[in-house]
Length: 179
Image (cartoon, rainbow, N blue to C red; front, side):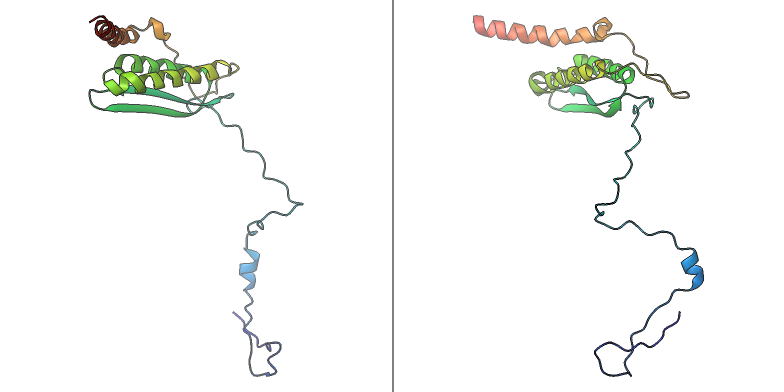
């Protein structure tokens, strides 16, 4: 570190000095370029666009940003399971099928779940499925695997468990109206 006396302008006295720091040469040689000035000037260019984000499961593009939900109704409580992210058509459809089937057989077992939770999850998954159907088919990325599609929802036996609470609710409403 070197300091050299320099008179302070306007002080009128030569005895006062302002220390000046000169960094050593080795520091100046190893110095990395500093951060860009903020705010950026009008002549600066915008940062390059981010690389395309692939599917959260398999990494392929094109993807759609969707939220897929499963709802489990308990007697006095509710439980939610949510998958957010960009998904390709195959992985997203596989998740929609699995989560919708779970909701159909586990979602109805509570009053709040019967009235609000399960219908919300089913409608939300329906909108997610519509978004995913519009995607172009993707080419798989080597070394990464897509989720297996599995059977469609109506070909899964657990999906028909939903008929039990629906028949029960219809019976309660019918018996209340007729008596």
